[in-house]
Each structure stands twice: as C-alpha cells, then as structure tokens.
Image (cartoon, rainbow, N blue to C red):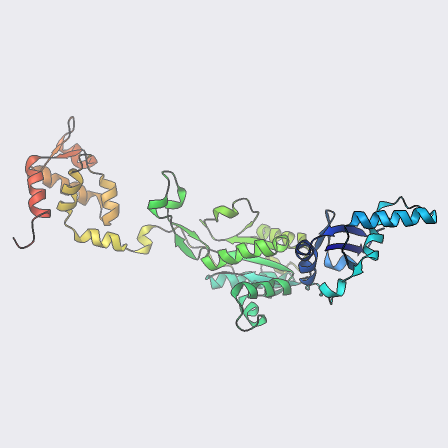
Length: 383
C-alpha cells in the first residue's frame, strides 16, 4: 500500500507533492501534526496550519513510478506529452484513491496565538509574577490547573500535557530554584561540579520541560529565574532566557515569543513593570540544610575513636574532612590530636613538630595508641 500527499498553500504558485509514503510515515509526518494544528513539512518546506489551503491524501496499490509510466504512455498515445514533473506528480495523487477523509475528517482550528501554557514549580510568587508579565504582553496565560481541567478523567499526565499543548500556541517553562540537589559521592568524578550543593528546578518542572521540548520544540520557551540555578546537563545546548525582571530581560522574552509567532503586544509600556518578581534566594550551603543523618551519627562516636581509627590507616588525619563530616569546627579536631600526642597515643610524622602535626594532621599511631584502639573499639561484648 502506497500513500501520496498533495498540499496547496496560500501564496504558492504550485502545490507540493510527496509520493510513496508508508502508513506510519503518513501518520507521523502529516496526519498527527495536522490533527494537532501543527505545521507540516513537505519537501523541506514548513507549512503552517493557517497557510495550508488544501491537503489530499491518495492511496494506490502501485508505486508512483508505475503510475507515472502509465500516465506518460497515455499522454504519448494522445500526443500530449507532459514534461513538467510537478504536474505529473499531481496527476499521480489525483489518479490514486482519495482517502483524505479516512485520515482527516475535519481540519483542526489553529490554537489562538495569544494562548500560552505557563509551566512553573514551587516558587508561587515567581510564577504569579511571570503570569502577570505575560498577560501584560496581551497573552492568555494558562497553567497546570487548566491543563488538568481540559483533560479527560483518568488521563495519564502526559496525555493531559498533550491536550494543553494542543490548546495553546506557545509554552513557557519557568525554571526556578525549587530544590537543592547534589550528585551522590559514589557516582561522582574527581572534578564533578555536580557534587557541590546547588539549586535546580523541581523534578516535575524538569519532566514537563523535556516533554514540551520533545512535543512542541518550535514553540517552547525556557526561562530561567533565580541565582545559582543549576541547568540540566542534557539541556546545556538548548537556548534559554536568563530572566531577572529587568526591562532588558522582559524585552528578550517578548522578542522570543514574537519569534515563535505568539501575538505579543508591546505598545503599552506597562509590560516593563508588570509582575512583582521576588528577590532570588542566596546560595545554599550544608549549614542551611541542618546536620545530615550521617553527621549526627558520626557526632555520637567519640572523637578520640574517630581519630585513632583514622590514624590506624597510616595516612595521617584529614582534619578538614573529619570536621566537615562531623559538623564540628576544625579546631576541635586539632585539639583532639594534641591530646592524643600528649597521652602518647599518637606522634608527629617525621620533620613535623607537635603543633604542626596537630594543625595539619601529619600524625602517626604509636604502639600504645594501637593497643588503646583495640581495647576501646574492639573490646568483646560482655567483658
């Protein structure tokens, strides 16, 4: 089974024709985009929904080459040869069985170019301000609640998003510092920047951003708002607007929306001040999150045991690392090392004084220290 497509466009001198499609190719390239009111691409030419005058889908059991041969043979018998390939291709479509209505019963209306779906996260004040700003541009802003209401009961979240994308001309994804995240140390490289604590958009927003980029890339705008926001590595090459509420960033959003054919209006300068965008939160440190369960557990272990165990490895003591893991000042760790050396359980490494060894952790475990480690930490239960 072979399918052939003819498209007539507004302002074009002749139609575009594509021949010998299989059903899957027909569905993915013409039927599904047409049903959703999206642009179709034929022979490398993008045809917007509002510019498409007529589409005809033909079906034949023969390949187009066989039909062309029959047409040319008939023209030769009639002594009316046709040398225009475009005209010949059009005759192939017109000679095949018209199945347009089987695939496209009605042409869908194009979404109103004023409609925009705003996807946002947990920072409600920022989302409300962005909505007010977009409305000041003359746009009809719709959010996730509208997407849920427009979907059928029991629909999967992706289906609800599809319905929202179909109903809106543009999608604006507002990425704000909703979550604090870090790479698990077990899976991090030596110089992996993602081991450091950083803010990022919530997983829900990241999912919807990726889904929007896949489903409606040509009319999706990613907007980043907030300082020190980690951007997804997979989207590092994707263009975005770093928005801060300034007139320059507002104009950039307006220009990007206009570029994707949104019906943006900037005659009224009110858009330059609409929306009370909140101040971005500052950088996040481990202290802001409070002590971790691991640090709490380590803090319950006597520092003396921790230091003796570290010295038993024969590599000295990483003062800063132990202090960070326990959530205690480095001076406390250094004082603990000094007491071990005073008690004769540890000694400075070669070419280090006691004060230097306590300061930088260049210590070694002594024989008495090893005995003390065994007696304190590995004493059998019941003795």
